[in-house]
Image (cartoon, rainbow, N blue to C red; front, side, top):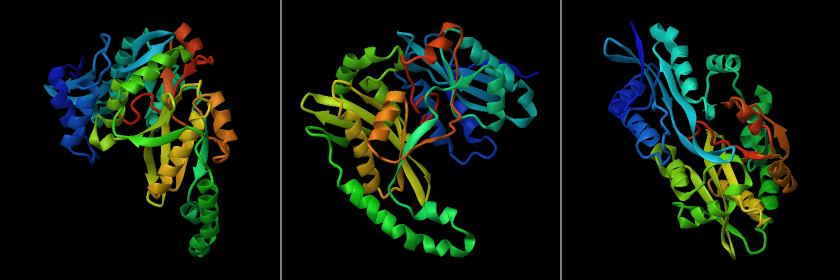
Length: 352
């Protein structure tokens, strides 16, 4: 009889080996050792009593796993650990126990938020039946196009795909010229950072009251998110002005060769500096150009941010489908629909 039980620190190596050896997995044991260490060993967020996850065992062997990554948040004005589902993998012959593991995770999240942001098609159907809702403000974005070769190629009929390069040349030139004429707002600059220092704690201390429900953004959390695993490193871009750090953006490269984009995963500014959003957006565009990327993706994490990004003229806003879900019970469900919530593309196990 298969048994479900909470994971402990003694199970870390077993979890890494199970995930590395799961059918179809191409990443090796060292990668998964690093991931497990990122989730549960160097994570600055205390688990608040929630388990690391659950293992499914048969005859002393792990045959299934469902992890929980705690992340530090303000939830309805109080600091707490949100739960984030990850690595929900069960060997085919034991999949009748999958929901039992997920129900255990839901039970642990009774007084908090539970995010599931990287589900496959089957689990998306399950989440809908379990009253999960889409993460708010995740369905619109601006796409700042930097190069046009690949987008044209995939849209042209097979017989004339060779024209893509010729057609893209004037569009690429216009994009370079248009973006090259843009300047940072007066007194501001944005550049890439190798770590988050004490100035990030100061910025968070001055701005943590802007929203009742949002991620914690102190230096420890940001260094963990951005630099905690070499295979999952992200770009940290800081906006600086006369007062020091005015805001920051976190981004990663996504896509496939020929159509690579720099996706902004989080953007946080002090509203007392109204030019910080523009400086960070332009900084991301310049960084994308230097890296030879094809686009920059700027998500609308709030309606106000969406309006500001659109007014900058960096691409047209468009509707998108993001399969990111959250479970919030009771009063917390209403909390997420209000203007006091600021959730980003870094919810759940994205980038972890």
